[in-house]
Every structure is written in structure tokens, then in C-alpha cells.
Image (tube, rainbow, N blue to C red):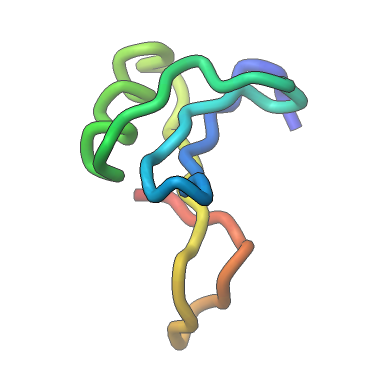
Length: 68
């Protein structure tokens, strides 16, 4: 995975963190998933951020990553 890839994941507090691959700390924490996705796109417009799945779907399950 490239180091410039950004990930949007839900935190236990209920807000959303934008992280780079292998980062210990979040680049930014925002209250909604939509805001976090928009910020991830601003931080790196060259790459599509990956978003953590929150529920079971016909295409995946929680803890897998999807494109927004």
C-alpha cells in the first residue's frame, strides 16, 4: 500500500479520522463521514480515499475498505 493513500475510519467516539497508511495518528478528525471523505480528497486529490465499511452488505463486511 502506498504511503500517500488516505483512509477514513470511524473512531470509538463516533467521529471519523482521516489517516495515512501506517500512521500512528490521524491527520484530521471530523464529526461526519462525509466531511472526512471531503477532507481526505482535499489532502490528496490524486488518490481516491478508502472508507471503512460499517455494516454487512452484498459487497463486503465490516472492517473492509471501499471507495466512496
